[in-house]
Amino acid sequence: MAAATPSRPVDLEFARRLPKIELHAHLTGSISRECLHDMWATRPVQHAALDLEDPLRALPAGKVDYDINTFFPLFSSYIYKLCSNLPSIQHSTKAVLQDFQADGVVYLELRTTPRAMPAAALTKDDYVRTVLDTINTHNNDGLNTLRAFLILSIDRRNTIAEAEEVVDLAIKYQTSGVVAVDLCGDPAKGDVRIFAPAFARAKAAGLKITLHFAEIELSGTDAELSTLLSWNPDRLGHVIHVKEEYRKRIEKHNIGVELCLSCNVHAKMITGTYSDHHFGMWRHSSVPVILCTDDVGVFCSPLSQEYYLAAQHFALSRSDVRELCERVVDSIFTGPEEKARLRRLYADWDGSESLL
Ligand code: IMP
Ligand code: ZN
Image 1 (cartoon, rainbow, N blue to C red):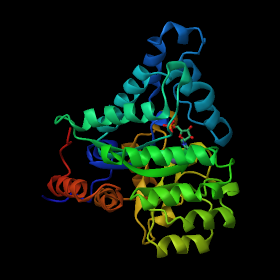
Image 2: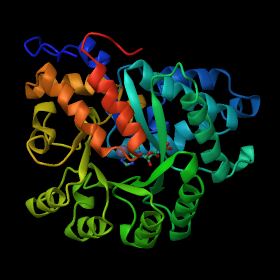
Image 3: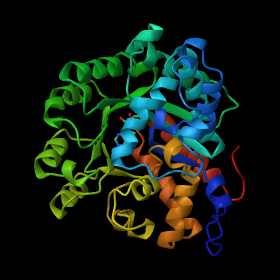
């Protein structure tokens, strides 16, 4: 039960062994390039006719400099074409769960935007059910150390009717592992005000709410931030372009902030580098701070590396990092059972053993 030796610096091995909680990861953005390649290599003949480039060439190893202009089209014009039938959804979801588990993640709230695939005769409902079935099969295997839950995303480009459909699905599958509704998508697009009734209905049904918040200057206006905060979100993602007034409101309501170091640095969403990241400011605030990967398949920095980078750039000791991780338990969207499991797990972890 001894705490980790505080004098030894955090290294990648320690960060990997550390039991971690991931709360902001997009399913399709978390698919590794190797997994995309497998799906490409085994794609059915009708997909081969699409003449899609090999993912290992389309997303070259080491390329992580996707910015706000190149990132979103990567999904619509490429990755979604590879994830376009039942086997590819099952295969990629399973691989994403395994990848997080292999990195020492013990609890995951994965998010995804319901997507219909007419060519494969799949509805949005079929998509959500397939992802949930894969998650629940994983959770029911006693050998797995990671437990996963699902958040359904409304894309900022959605119509009101599409947003309501996401909420319908979230309510329908609430007892099968859906815990919340998210607002995501290109922050330069859409008018968030139209989604107020959809988020109000989700909240009234007992679902939690998490929102991509102030990712770019354009989505950090007073009008947008006031609107988003008026929905009483339970957590906020990114939280970059926020004035003092909004920081204070976030603190007053003790809203957890999901921060994504490598994504923000590589996509140039912040000025400067890791040491300039607003994690440095939020970690001294009173709100829960949650380090997250966002899109590990694109930015190639697993959660262990995010904790390692935070330790490197903000001079965190092993006990600081462990404490940071452990405090995330309070921000998860599931109930007392998972919180108790995670608290027990941290209490039993002596810092030397991997749980795998
Ligand atoms: P999916 O929802 O599982 O299909 O994951 C990919 C989708 O997540 C993308 O098409 C985007 O809409 C959304 N996404 C991923 N990363 C970000 C982000 O940093 N900001 C906003 N939306 C994002
Ligand atoms: Zn995100």
